[in-house]
Image 1 (cartoon, one colour):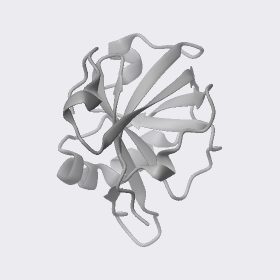
Image 2 (cartoon, one colour):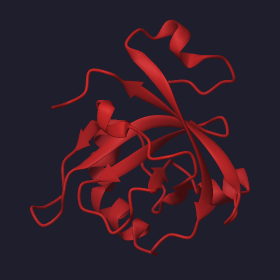
Image 3 (spheres, rainbow, N blue to C red):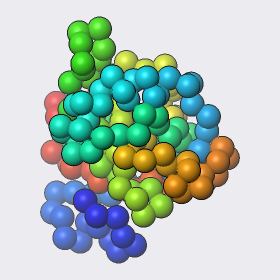
Image 4 (cartoon, rainbow, N blue to C red):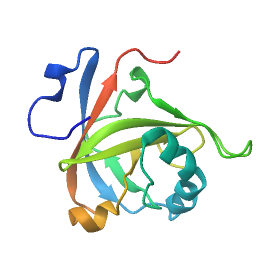
Length: 143
């Protein structure tokens, strides 16, 4: 995955891009705890050590059809935690992952994003900012 202004799907058969328009919102204050718990698996499977926190986006253009995509399965660190699915994406030209925990307190209108750095700081984002997230959706979904 490479984030650029060109159409990413032109050279990637079987992949389509979902465009999610959303607003940066305050999270529940728990993302860092859970990202730390899953950090080893994120590193092993996604190839980077994530910043201990998530960027929360309230979806403005309807619920994304991530269920139609094949997510990357992240196993829980212990039986008391649930599976997480990760989806490669781009936010403001930066490579990120949307994470969808099977166990969550968030509504379906909230997506959580992780990266190797603090997105709010590096991208200068604050609550209320409107962003577009481009999700690289593999269409051979898991059933």
